[in-house]
Length: 170
Image 1: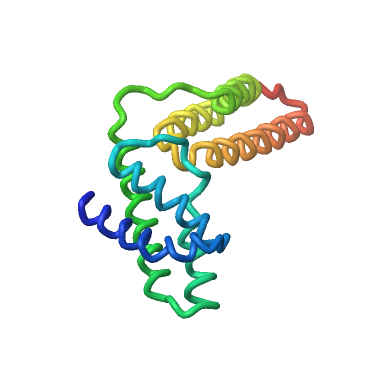
Image 2: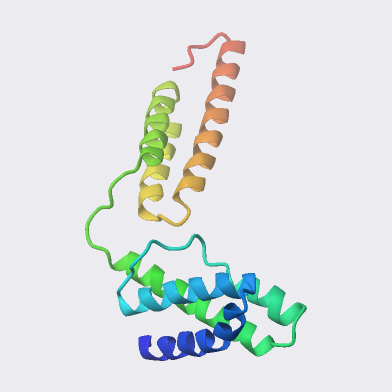
């Protein structure tokens, strides 16, 4: 697959290069991203990823909607899709447990603190959510935040109902 992907990247670079040499800003951005993709596929990343890959969107806007090169836009979109698939494959192949960054540590601490204030059912739900957060890295932050908010609101609601009925909230 990488040989076919490299051929597509080289073809896109060959078509983008003349436009980039005339300092056409969208072409410069696409060229930079295509070069990074080529290095990534070859296993030689000289620089960090240039942000999210947006070359497909730029190509559609500049070469398909307002331009006369829909085949180039299609090629660049294919390259972006294939590189993103390869990036997911590489991420899944990494062995071992990944290191926690400060955001994940903060979310875990908030989940722990919230679980001490709520009942057993909510504690179990938050524990399951924490495990899912670390198992599925793609959506971990947003799933974690959603579970925290839902758990917090449910805990407040449960405590409010217990206080209204003069029962012990724990």
